[in-house]
Image (tube, rainbow, N blue to C red; front, top):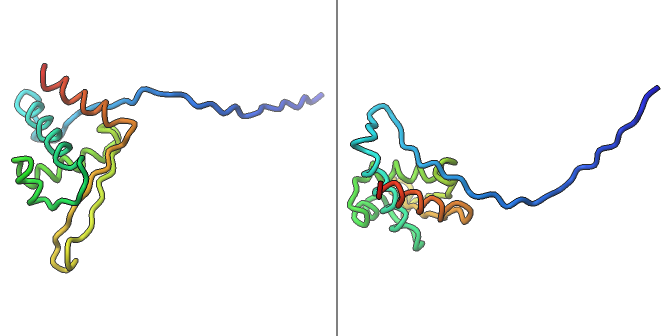
Length: 125
């Protein structure tokens, strides 16, 4: 005897609190020395870019008072899931053969406020 069982798929929309886990890492990372500094750098990059527009690394260096390599690292962090899965676009500025790139940040509306709150919270600890 065989019984047929029919299961219908149930669609539901569930509002989930966005989860952001600001966790820096790397072989030279020392939390006691680096956590607050990197959090401040990340906030500075967000503040500089969130108003919109396209920015070169040199322009972002000037706006954030951080080295270009650090700005670039923070933009890579912003793309990661644990930092909120934000979109950082890039395009050549002028002739692509010159190798000059510019960047634009589009904050993920589901995680942006959680990220900013987490960075402020960690800085005040």
